Length: 418
Image (cartoon, rainbow, N blue to C red; front, side, top):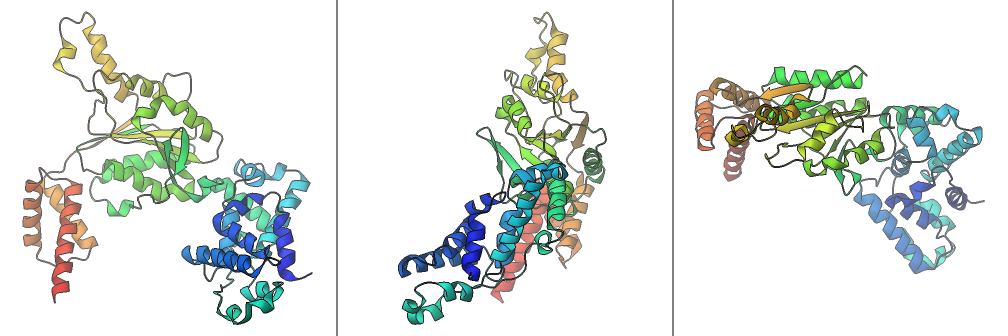
């Protein structure tokens, strides 16, 4: 039997990895190699659809990598079992089916444009157009697929460490419409890009590494002035440790009542999850803070061992309190005060990010200038940086970054004029 037709039959009979045919490029490829008996118009349309997607995603020279990568992130009985550390417990029939599917996908990655054209039923009717059809390169598959003898074990190890499906493909997620949805383009900020606050940042890092190592760790509240890098610290920690099995789900404050639904979806996964709640605060008449209190400690729905909560706030005491809350008319005034303070106390670790003083701010400016290779008069730079901060209501790392960005833009504009 011819090479392309045999490959088409093998892909038609995929069992464990059959879901890969629902992926856009893989599906277009499958439709093309099963169109060898189609009329010319239909065949050429499927050719164009496949090549268009392949080129668009940057795989024009890497067909094997593209197809194996689609399988790499597939969620199926094997990847789920492997993620739970139970790949070895699968029945031998299932293991054999996995190995067969891997072989079929690898074989599919070796089909060239010439292979398909040579087996197309109406090849002669294409005439000279056959010589002008866009083609592709083969390349190599992802490493875990490259060795037939070890592919099963290497994939099982990958799923055990990184999870499967979207949790292997993405690092950041958001809770929306009662589902966990991936963030395709997460903030790529790195810890090395954050200046100042080393002591505060190390507290968060140490807590996170303890969490990843299975050591007792705490929910974390990062509080303090705006623009000091609280949210950036959390996102940078994710970017540092996602290869160690860390994932993050951002949860809007107004969806805290759905926390039990969220943890049900991730509790059994082998990964570690940070539930990120940004800019957390409550008005004195906002009783939803009681929902967060129950989540942190005291509710019947326990937080699973693979989950921590990291929250940011501009307020140390998350519930806004007014003098009227301490009114002598309140017969249980102390109870009222304790109710408003008890929420922040339930975070085991509270880290303060206060605005830097003048020296601290200017040190951050100099660090950013050095990182961006700014060769300029430091005295003039620091004078301008201070004026920039005063015109914008105060010093902060965010203000320093904005100042350096402005300087870089000015330099670029001057260079363009030359």
